Image (cartoon, rainbow, N blue to C red; front, top):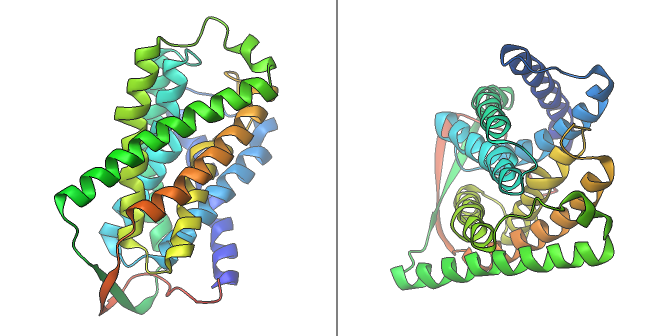
Length: 282
């Protein structure tokens, strides 16, 4: 599995790079050649994590493609762009254009990347124990509040350790109610939804699920998009946010997996032409 994942992740990174260049051209945006290597590195991290998800998923075909699309678009594009918009890092027009580009890239990449991993296997669909409405309600409520607390703590720590950021954000910080409502009712629920999706569709141990969700939130939702240079954020801001978001999102992903996990009660074998079977040595 390791060799297959590394090799196919390279193909995924190259595919993503081509898609970025293609849709940049179609949308009238420029692709800086000087930043190409940084873009390939960023895309490799994305492809590696999504590749591991594909190889470890109990889904196949169109359902797997939809799942990969949702993870990549919502965590790797939409959630980040909403944050940039409310902090006045990007304008409404720039944000809308980036969301469109992210959607087009994600919806094209997902089925192609799933196809790259295709092979005939005996697939195991996992059935989980049911949980009451109250059981889900308090867990989701705690998870949403937990995200807000980690978000605030990470932001405060960053400004103390890295006070230069305050100069960049001078005059850009949104009203308090906008900041809180965006984290609680948009970004928090997106993280929770994707964590639930991954928990219910991964056919690996709970520990591996927690680590993968944490890495997905940290890398897709922060580190990878901050690697390539851009006109919106200078290098020192991207570096600071890389550490902040990477650490806080990873911790949040781990805690979400623990809080929202459900016991598997049955596995059903399905013979189909889907994905590579997960291996226990990863």
